Length: 215
Image (cartoon, rainbow, N blue to C red; front, top):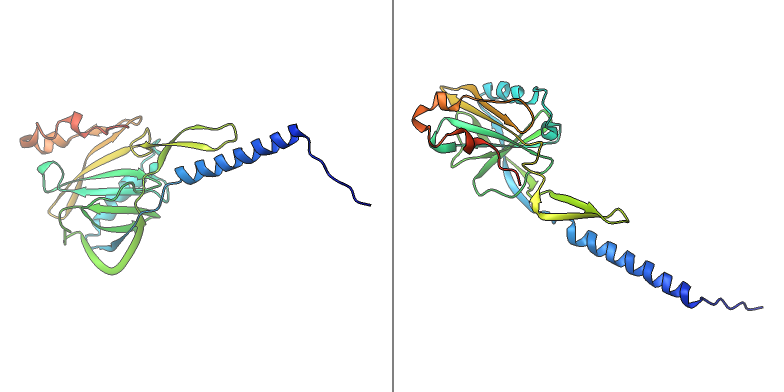
C-alpha cells in the first residue's frame, strides 16, 4: 500500500526559510573567517643570554593584560625613535597581526613567540639559524556582535591588537646590558623613565608619543 506524503504550503515555506538561513549563515562564516597569510621567517638563536632575564621581567609581571599568556606573540623593535640602543617590546596577543617588511627573524621562549623587527640583525644579540618558521601574519578582527543564531559578526577595520589588554615595554641595550626604562599599560600602573636616559631626544621621546593608540 503506497502512502503519499504531502507537505502543506506553510510547512514548505518554513523549510525554505530554514534553508535560506543556513545558506546565509555559511556565507557569513565564509566571508568573515580571516584568510591565512603565511610568511617564512628565519628562526633566531639568542647570543646574549642576558636577554632572557629581560624577557623574564616581562613574563613574570602580575598584570591584567591577558596578552602575555602562553601562546602569545610579542614584537621586539629596535632602532626606535632615532635611538640605536633603545628597543621596545609590544604584546600582540594570540595573533601576530599584519606582516612587517622589517621582520628579521623570530624566536620562541617560554611558550611565547617573539618577532624581531629591525633594519638589520644585531649580531651581539641574535644569530640566524638555517631553520625557517612559517608564521600566519593575519589580524584577529574584533567581534562587534552576534546574530540570533550565535554567528559572530566581525569588523575587519578594527583589530584586537592594541585593545585594553595592550602593554608595552622599553629597554636600553648598552654594552651588552639591559635596563628597563618604561612599562605602559591601559589599566596597570606603569612608569616612563625614557626621557631621563635620553634628554637629547625629549621632543621625539615625549610621553604622549609612547602611549599606545587604541583602535
